[in-house]
Image 1 (spheres, one colour):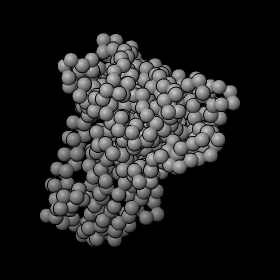
Image 2 (cartoon, rainbow, N blue to C red):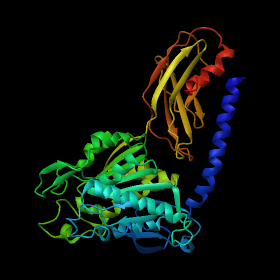
Image 3 (tube, rainbow, N blue to C red):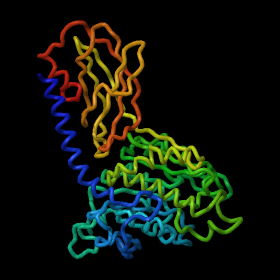
Image 4 (tube, helix red, strand yellow):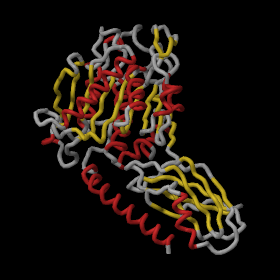
Amino acid sequence: MQVRKTLVLSVLLLIAGMSVWLGVHAAQSQMATDPGSPGPCSVISQTVTISSTIQTNIYYPNSNQCGVGLSAPYPAIAFSHGFSMFGFSNGAAENAGNGQHLASWGYVMAIPRLQDDAETRITETVAVINYLETAANSPGSFLYQKVDTARLATAGYSLGGSTALAIAARDPRIKAVVGLDPVYHSSDFSGQEGPPIWNPQAEAPNITVSTGILGSPPSTCNAQSDYADIYPLVGATHKASFLVVGASHCVFADPGNQFCSTPGLGCSGTISTTLTQLSQKYMTAWLNYYLWYNTDDYTYLYGAQADADVSNGLIVRQVQTAPRGLTATGFTGTVTLHWTLYDYPIVAGYNIYRRQSGESYSETPLAHIGPSAAYLDTEVVGDQVYSYTLCSYDPAGNSHQLSSEVSAVPKPGEPLRVYLPLILRCADGNC
């Protein structure tokens, strides 16, 4: 029977995916637990000059001292610092702590010293990404075979947060992005917002990779908390924002600069090592989950640990991970569901829930399927209203958000078996 064959195929795909994941996860489970603490790798750093002018600090794991938890090739991140007051401050040095921290968790972290013009710094950061790709395949490079060019990400702080997001919108090589209190307006540091220097209305909807955005309350350095404007515009299927309650805009840079720590001159809000570590925890957890596919970090983003931060007033969280495009269509003796597949390793499959009119949803899903964009429900009675919702789950079985609800009414009669393969193909968009 075709339906049975389809279900068997889904199970086989799920088993294959689990086999790949188990190989990665067995290693990841050896890592330290809290991503806000230093990771298991000792770190090496080198400074290179890219395209003759872009001085870049590169932090990467010592492959012989990561223990059994991590091994090369590593995901790589191009990190963009904030406004440098036209070169007066060294933004790369002001984020050395972020570089050290992420490298200790098994990332190659490149932090270039960038100009302040928005488009120029985007071009410079892309040049750094090109360098990482080339170095990974160059036998004479210290990064030879250390960079996984299939797992590239951008991250950035303040103006650099917008730089990272803009590149994620434009460059298909990017697989994840983190913005640390991103700013897209110029500022005179008087608490007034200046003209925009990046257009999130035009570009943020083009960001389709997993997007984590951290933010702080309004301050003299980020008058309107720009992250709050950017977040709803991002087009990613998996995205979240985390407001660090009471924090200064300055807490996201590590070690930061003298301007931030000078009373009366720096940004308003609280600066503390604890808040900086909180920022690093969410940044690292996001990248661990979406680049290393480490399901242990689910709890720090969506599970009990993140819930505790919310309950304790440390974080205000917004999450959007629900499947999109769910539809239901009634046929004779069947209801066909289809939705937009989120084709990403962290999604192992989908749980489908069903209820009839007047009933509540069961906690047990109707079906637990692999990474597919369609499902055919044949256990229905004609002329009855059936409602459905579904959620994706990761390889450890952790669930993401439920989709919106859809309903359909099947027609009376036995399923037309001869048409089932056609219905399934059409539901997958292959008519």
